[in-house]
Image (cartoon, rainbow over all chains, first blue to last red; front, top):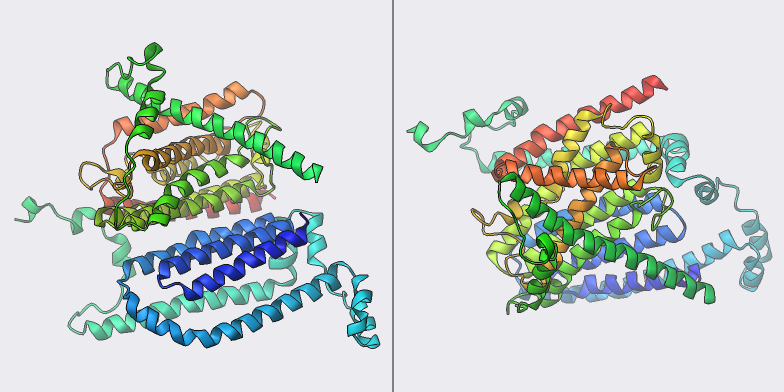
Length: 226
Length: 317
């Protein structure tokens, strides 16, 4: 089986799982299918020999984020009848989604052929204008990460060339966005808590006292407290 | 096509060797546990079946498989069946990157440590799904409890492993072992070893952190509804994880298997014995104490070690 065949199979699994995610009544099945999609994506990364990225993808998305989703969904009491009614309005979006998937596949196939086999452009030339063919053949002037990944280990490339090298500013910006997201969530929930518990005098979180809190002081034996 | 067939047959044979060896190892690990605990408590332990009780694990396994399989009516049958299989499969998959000798390894991948971290983080799903699919309060609460425990201690263990990676300068397990030929990492990283040991005890649900199966005060846990083969698969997966953790600790801190295979195996068995030693010695933790230890003691300390190791490496360079 060639790499392309494997890739198409994985993409097929991904599309099937996406359909199940949209159609399934029980949200737990949706999350399980989401995990399958993450696994397929990691496998796609493995087919292009990016072990580190694949492992990190599984570690972050499956090991951390999906577990939290699963936790939350399991603890919420879900009314299945309501979900079945609200599912009907998603049917229109399915069509849009299918069109999007077809478009993505088209982009993928054409890009695959342009980037990896430049000779294939000649086969496609009947669909293209002559000047476009010349333009496409001259396109790969960017830094070819794929060759870098293959030459050394991908963790080295990630560290020295991508994250801390030419794209360090985007990395830092992503970190700042993540920080803002976390702080924002804390801020919003703190406001909500204050609105709900106006009677409670201690509105702010006292981190110092929280860290310094000890068992012996806070949790007392029943007999001692008498 | 012939090449493909060859690869499939070779991979199948290799994985068969790993799986059979692992199952025999698990069987005798249970016997070892009972014998060591018996010796610590001045008892004889199992000594009836076979010569000095050597066939006891086989008898236990046979008894477990011959029991009746019970599936609750209200259970989600598909997920109920998948959960133990998932746990067992993941505990086998983890063994594919562990080197048995210098070059004898099922898959020598570059990022072996990260692979272990990633795959062992999937192991939580078996427990959560088992708890949810049983459709019982006790199993559900037990599943959530165990999942929270495993997720929170994974952080500290991951940080310690990261500091080892930084210290060794590589993520390949075999290169980490080769780096320790002169001095074992336990000498410069002793606090890290202690933290990793505690986290490993919690990750594998061993006493004193065996709250998932606290049969006395909390009603067992995620596996209350399981019987027969399902329970056996959970049991096998758990013991495979214990052996894996002891081997990993010996690889990370005690030099692993570089020159002498028997010495390398003895390191792993020694770690396993220390797991059993802890079980026979310490009483069980309360759940809030467990969480306190994880988030307020181990995590800051692990962060401190990580930052310390990074700054040491940077200064030396």
